[in-house]
Image (cartoon, rainbow, N blue to C red; front, side, top):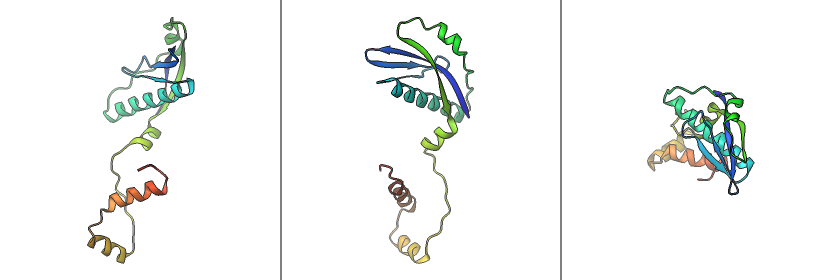
Length: 134
């Protein structure tokens, strides 16, 4: 699912603090605006993805102007944060997925004789192939 929520950004002590009033507990920060936006998007997507998986209700997003009216502190501003929980799940879902694949019979026999951990070897090989740190 795709969502958009207003977030409050507050410049403080060289960092940018971010809170999302509509999502309880969603607070993060960044060292600059780009970092703060990235961190806010990640925090919002994680919160929503978790709520979807737990089948919890998703709060309705407030109007941007409603949140902006509450920003009275110097250095505060409101910006919209977009989150895609389907994409987030693709990147971070750690549930096991069954895959059917084929290898030559001779290789299968040798691997079985050696009690090779097929799943672990496939994961390591894919990470290596995709240049993902192990």
